[in-house]
Image (tube, rainbow, N blue to C red; front, side, top):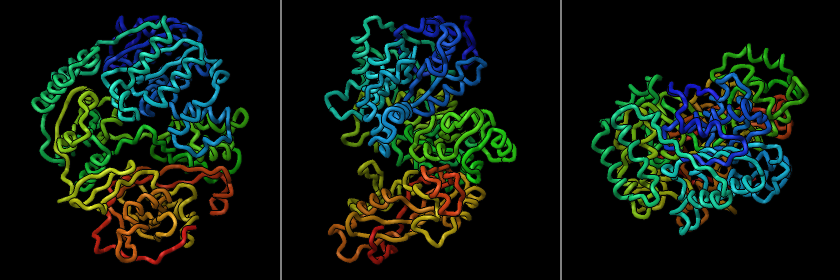
Length: 624
């Protein structure tokens, strides 16, 4: 196998070549630091398996990774080549688990469960028949695998009976907090690695140590700490002190958020503003929006955003769509973000093929509704300036990293676990190829403090309990029915679909306006979502219950009748996305045809509830 050029213009190193050219039945464990060419080595490994070992790309190789961003990067690199490796199956763990469940228990109790629930459900199945055809199994980012994902890898390795290549970096193990067992938490992914070594005595261990990312003095200083992070017993306090010294002494300082405007208009040098929590991300994003500085907010690893173009192109079609018809629809569209016609058609065929040259819309809509889609049909947020948590930045690199220096949070009681926090800081700084900057977080409103309950951030004033702002997430929008067809009888679903398609853009501000609230049974509140005064959707029941609980609805915190925030502001459009239904009647009843497809808005932000004195009592209503 001749050594090809890597993504940074150099040939495969000897270390990389030994991994890439290993036989298909090898059991490989590859430890590779940030910027050592791990992804490129993996791509060349897949090329070798297909071209030199004769492994079938479509059904003979399974590649799993933790995040959709990592899966997307690998897929893009494979498809950039001209070989058959472009057809290798690349999936996230939840996508693979969903695929297995759909095959073995198509109508099982897993339907409707979240990603974690699906992985747990898959662990209960006998997968041997589903894995029989695979000749090689690859896992990227194994250091992120704890809990059910680690158990899923162990199950696959036990039942697949084939060669494997496992890649990861212990220095970037930052998901130990997900482990429920406090005694196991310090070990994290080492539990999985130890099991692999004991289970497979013929295991070959490799290390990639060459630096292909860091190109400046400061980024090389970060890189030089990697060997110390992967020692058998790292000296965490000293490593943390050295990372702090690099960050506080050598990183350049951004004086104010207005200085980020230049970065936002520099597409040749991508910039990531990295924050410790999603509340910090939303607060930083709000500051930039006030300054009209363009940017996007990185999505969570488990979030799936089905792209807008699917509904726009296909919502007026019925039943079956032939390739010739799809090509005509594609050619007539000038929609931004529309992929090339062959790529778009291939991705649709992967989930809704019906015969050799057509797709069935009911199959497509049903799989969208059940979240059973390949990761290639999940849209990622992209722009020159990205605001992200450190965890969401895993597996990515940027020319420039701006780390938000929030010492109040880092030093909070009960949060500072030296080993994990040191690795988190290393992950943040090692995303940079060239520049590392530091900046203070935008200030929170005076006398307000952050508080997290049941996985949702809020702001509260002083030592009080009542929130002044709440974290708004994409799942807080009701997507079960087309906007205007449920709980909004006076709205026109057809007009709303046109408005979403033509008038609503990423980053546009939206407002939540009170509809109704109840304190009976399980308290819940509903809000209209408006864009420039136009109704575009309503909030979900889950959000309504969550907010009502935080507002103290149904308990004795209110001495008079319950009062509700009338408006929630500070929210913006994350995307206009496609949703589907297993029944074409859902769109037919809304006079939207029989495709089963429609558009809905995904919104995010730090939603401000307004002044307490502006909240109003509302008549109690029954839920229905």
